[in-house]
Length: 110
Image: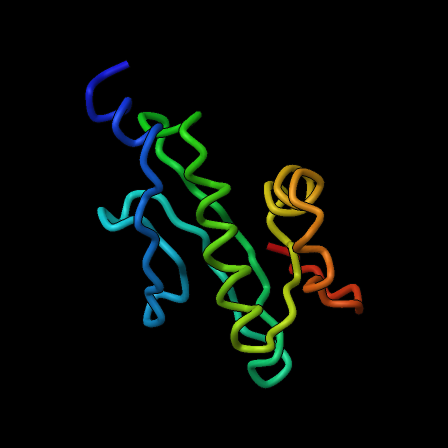
């Protein structure tokens, strides 16, 4: 593991909201989770998570999801987990976020 990778593995990465690009991303813009707003801004559809191969295994995808769910929670927005990472990996491991999941089945076809 390189010094950079070791440092990232021990520190919580800073995740920023890039409203213009409709995503939450790492400061270097390399890892991100994209969303689409639905139902007049009341629902955030998490459609895609990307972490470059050089940064996989460090928990970045989970940190991106937490940032998106915290944003949704603080803005009274529900979440559609269209991205398979969110629905199949993140939510089963982090059940405390499940109450934010939108009750209607509006999964994106992306």
